[in-house]
Length: 181
Image 1 (cartoon, rainbow, N blue to C red):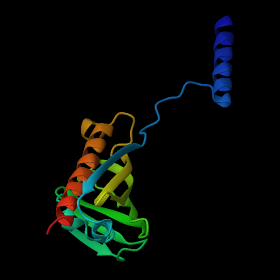
Image 2 (cartoon, rainbow, N blue to C red):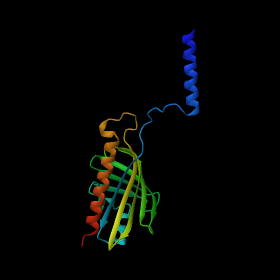
Image 3 (cartoon, rainbow, N blue to C red):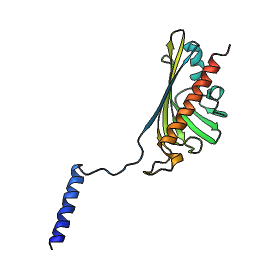
Image 4 (cartoon, rainbow, N blue to C red):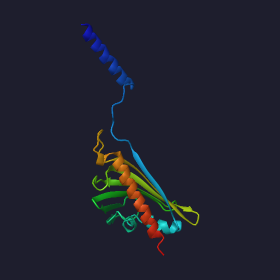
């Protein structure tokens, strides 16, 4: 009888803590990750913006992009399919702010073999810096496997490494393309 009473009290206390929001939290899946890189380019912001502001031109300057299929041009709502070494991903253009020289886009269709993320949003911004430009590329994303115990190739570290590499190679390619004489 005493054992049953103790179990009942324990259950009541546990339920009370849960209801009050005071119970210990269980693991809850992935947290958002971030990759942000900036590069200085010896070209005017307008020259660099011509490349960045053209949503379909990423294949001309990011060496990881093998092919781009663009629909909708370079206006909000446009979509591009990027062919990468390990498959295709689809991105959607959210915003183009030409006066601020900024584009924002998101992943619409994932391919976790191509990039081990389940979702991302990204912004590329071109600003004046001395006689040239600073280009900042910022991405926020979730790892490919959103379970509590992802395999190594689909975990946070893999997602951060892949997104950082994509951004760095893209910025280096953009710099090379924008400074060609």
